[in-house]
Length: 466
Image 1 (spheres, one colour):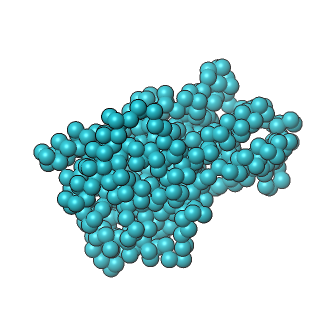
Image 2 (cartoon, helix red, strand yellow):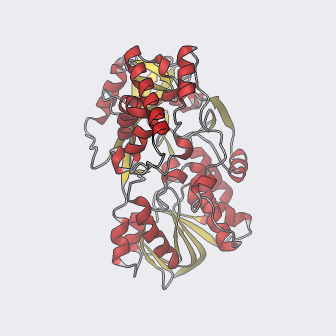
Image 3 (tube, one colour):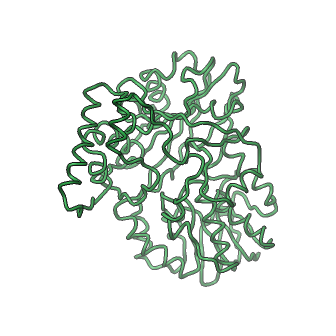
């Protein structure tokens, strides 16, 4: 049986962050075990048969950490963009954030939204301010009023998460949702002002070539291929004997273990873990992510738009990215081609017909005037991620308070987007730093911040999106 001091499960951003930090500290006795044949996890990229590059969703690069920034800059050439994000609603584009740009709506909808904000302010003035929403749905209505809730927030969030907002908590929100300012919203309407600069991603960076996956492939090269064991699916963790078993029959003895596989999957293979903890972890909710790439001939019909939100039911996707605008090298020839990438969520509460998904997406693009003609399509590409979004359900925090400490007590440390199951700290920068901070905690006895204190981790604005 082989031995390793540090065993890292998963070659996504978290695992790579841990590996790079170990290397910096002069520790070379580590291996990264990855079930797939490629690096990157959900941050991987692929090139289709026609030469179009695709990501697993609309990733853009941003950060809350100097350490992450310095690492990224050192890896490869970058392009920087001014964000143009829009909401397509009522057959028109409304700049994002929607709640600050109500002037673009038809007057009936505009008044419905504005009067709802006024209602919120009246309630705040007349109430004792002791009201606390029980779930995300109640938070939406209490924060935006019924107009914005019904026109945009409720239908859009169901399409994103694939669960009704009443099934979710709202502790994850932080910087991710712009709340409504009555004076600001009214001024924008009266003076016909655009309000476009909100958020951490008003500018963002993207790799010049190779998509998001190029970032993590480049970092893996820095770490060195001799530290990676690819195609190694973990099937058993014995924390008492400190032994890992893999699907190919091999075993490894470890001193320290970091797992980045989904928490609910990890608990099922930890030898000796109490069955009540395993059962609790199975209550964690998640959605599947379907990504549909449409390669097109001609010039973009959407200008410099980066991504667009689609709250209405006349399309299956909740977001579409003009992926050729991120980098000209995302298409075979930028003079002749452009590309759109759609995202469709899926769950037991929002099923998706896989047989018709591509056609449904094309029909949605045509119906919403995103592409001029079906004849312009020269390539289609699809990817289905079983684990797309870790849902911040109403029950999530109570589940994690039982499951995570139980694993920690066995020295089985679970971190990352699905390892920690905390959406509020699951972007690429957060995930990477969870790996870095885990190493710091083991090697330097420095407490982890990102996992433990999400609000602290998100206190500083970064420079781009998810």
